[in-house]
Length: 124
Image (cartoon, rainbow, N blue to C red; front, top):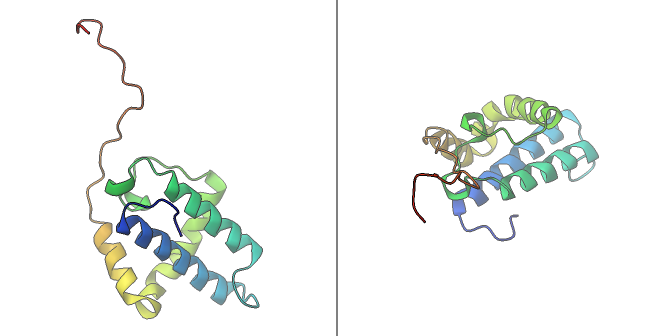
């Protein structure tokens, strides 16, 4: 999962995304064990995006996030997966589905600036 994850919610988010992709792949692509290469690529990409999320512990669900860190192509692919898997998660992983819905109600935090501009009127 995530190597240096400090937050259980981020770990749960990573697991939820993985389960959604697995469900989608199993029902749509029917691979022989595991994920097909396209879905594996998407799962790896989603994990990397979570690792680099600027919000980390305050992370909202991606649908409610102000920063869209997915490339356009990958965003379209993950949307397709979530549209298919989202409703079905209630059958296959009900607890994850409910927790994801609760997480979706979290407020979106403001993004902190990396290099705030120095105020010229403020003494050092």
